[in-house]
Image 1 (cartoon, rainbow, N blue to C red):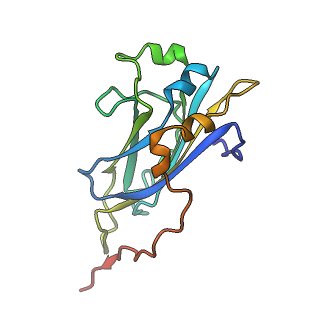
Image 2: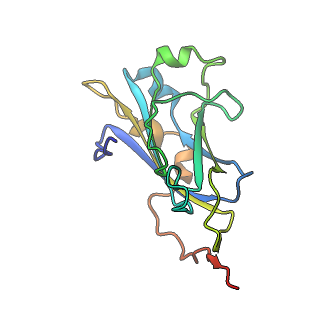
Amino acid sequence: MARLARPSTSSAVFVWQGMIDGPADIVRVQLPIPTAWLAQATKPSLRFVCAWDPPVNEAVRGVWACRRVTARLRPEPNAKAIHGTRADHGSYPLIDRIYDLSGSKLAKLKPPPSSDLWTMELFYEQTAEYYAGMTFPPQQRVAFAAELTDDDEKPLSPQAAVQALPAAATMVRLAVPPARLPVPIVIRSS
């Protein structure tokens, strides 16, 4: 597994955390990927790292984590999802992908991306039975970091293009979130 390098001034990092309400819920998060920057960058890419805290069950050692989150990157909300590299973490609750956003890759998409706001879809499925002595709520906490970068020797920073977008005014700059009560875990007793 590759480590997240410290972001440089030639990249833009987006952090999101939230809740998937249940196994039938799909969370859609908009990611700013400026088309102007994509057209000028030599080797644009998006590194996406997502983690979640699933219920676990030692009785299913081959699976261990009882929930698996799936992430899909779409250039438009209803467009076909694009594929990134796959890092197999088995049952470990982590996704680590790199999406090649080069012009040659994006030209193959039908239709080609035309929006500066792409969509990351997140949902989960139950992969194993929960521990019999406990009841878990359907909500699943999820967080991700996405780094937009140009992997060229002389990279073009996406910062100016991202900050020029109208959506930049609505982005939160690592504010302190309000205190939140954790979701309780109910333990069954006889």
